[in-house]
Image (cartoon, rainbow, N blue to C red):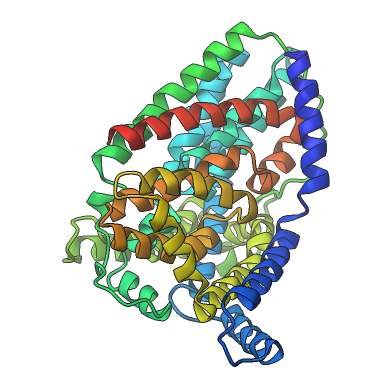
Length: 469
């Protein structure tokens, strides 16, 4: 194991030298797409200078795309992460974590509790799962530090992060929930100037609720904790965690007499009442829904609405909710600035015709049966450079839809294949690990050896699943 840890540290150093920050990658991808479009798609009779200006104009328009797949979509994804984090900071979630801690007596038992807890929360909301996994991993570390007991803290951190390997199979997956919106797919393809007969939406039962997704998700819930338990039993790389105290936001830490309108901010009647009202609106929308799919109401806006209501209810007051918001808001800084650049890339691909070229190249080597596998592996590779499920869907989604139509492939399965590939290489891509690393105070080299092993487990689970189904 020590030898493998040294090798992992060398790998991390190589990644640091080769891969810049995610935002820099977005910029480099923009330049690369611009160069490829310039030399592969320039119309005859048009000068390079004139065509370059045309491409730049398309890119600039794409930056501020206000369609359902542009800035609106970016805001939906930012809300999912922030609301999930806010919910994870609520007293109710803290009580759940404290109740689970009594079962964390060894590294082996801890990784099972942490991984199952993180995966379960992540299937509800990926932001909630990510922060829940980080907080419970931190609490386990604090428990062992207080008791002066040795534990494999890096492995426990990896168990908390494993939610990012399964989240697309849950209720907040970018591609699956977006494709459930009525009229979204035809509008997206029309926006990309791609003609054809496309389904108005992909029902819940064909993606998240499909037998393949349910079986593979259950396989992850069973196999991943079992693997972590056996691994923890067979390895003894343990030490007492050395943790620094954090300045976490104190919610309602002191009793103060509030006056005038200030009392509204601290009113439990207002906070809980508003939260319950929002939840009732969501429940009414679910009952009144009459679309094609029985669970078609589970879309991004519905998920965000319910998590807003749940967060307000569990935090009890507007002030508590706002304090949690202030702590959670930093999570979105990366995707806030990166999403417009991905939309700019998409606009370049659309205006130049690159998206059709890419689709044709995949069609030439794939068939209806192999397309999901090709999509799975290509999505894993793309995720290294576009570490956002929403950003990746914005770029890769139209290509997948167009190619599946040309080949007559199973579109819902191909969308799931992209989702599986995207989430799997999160175990190697450190972008989404940053919140967890900050909360747990772990270093990347303490996490990477174990997430790499989880990546290999995931390749087997999802690869075999895509072949069998």
